[in-house]
Image (tube, rainbow, N blue to C red):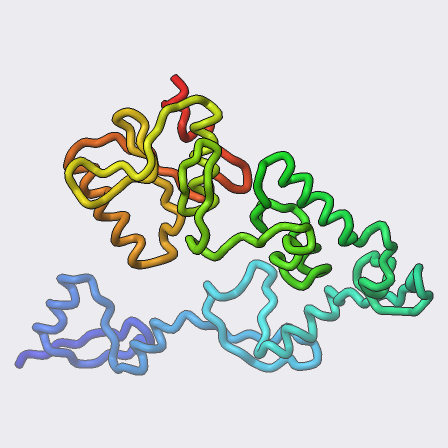
Length: 285
């Protein structure tokens, strides 16, 4: 094979190379090197620097793109920490004196008391207040509140041990788990859950005539409520039980196939704030 003299693009050395390789390099605008060592050296963009830690000053190599705008480069994380901790010292905790017991304690914030026990009595939500608010909610709504409806539920759990114990201390039966207990609405309808009773009472108080457990056409499936030709479903266990979601999909399939009108209600539409006026606004017209 014919060879020609070529100059190395890195070291400038003149060496022999096959003509076909030279032509190929010219065609694709490749640089030509006399050896792999020269090729690696040419592609290496690293420069030699010294560690920015004045106590170290170790020689290091960094790519030009890796050098930060500050120009500070370190050989290790420990060197970086030494310099940065000197420049930006961490906050030291202050020794404070508890206003209640007089005991000294460390704190990074402006805490006035060393522990919960030392907080003034007025800042601790008492049992009597919790019971009073639960009873007040019952008198207004006609039912006991759910845990997430009550703003001070954490305080109730702390004072009584559990939320259900707080309900029991207020003189009521705790909310049952899922559908273990039936509820009777104001119009006499038997509801499978407290949530369904709330919806039923909403319809009754607005004098909206409705059916309970009406069938979907000629199928075995039933809807929670039906107002004229509108089906109303409360999907209370959506994304909680796999079997429930499968049943829900079957109902939605029937609704879509027969072009039925559906209003879907979810727990978020009832709690913390009832949004039934917005969700069921179609029935108010």
